[in-house]
Image (cartoon, rainbow, N blue to C red; front, side, top):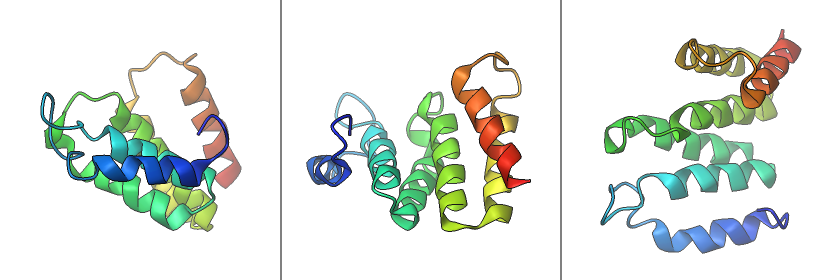
Length: 121
């Protein structure tokens, strides 16, 4: 993804699909799902991105304390905004802000999310 080849990232992550809902040491602990969602966002495929981020959020029991949960919520909000669904995007951002209610206000990704949310108003 750092080489701006999101389609290649999705292709490379295909091999992890059988393990992505397992937890370590035998599983991939949801990470491939998150990174596939990010790759789809970079490829401007918001429908597939939203599906991946939602899949991540739907499986919290695999790793309840993963730092990727709020980031997946943010990814979902961004994917919904990219689809033009401002109402659902606003709700997704609001859910993120609830998750991060105790986060450091200077957290760069949180500040960026608040700016994106403000543009939806």
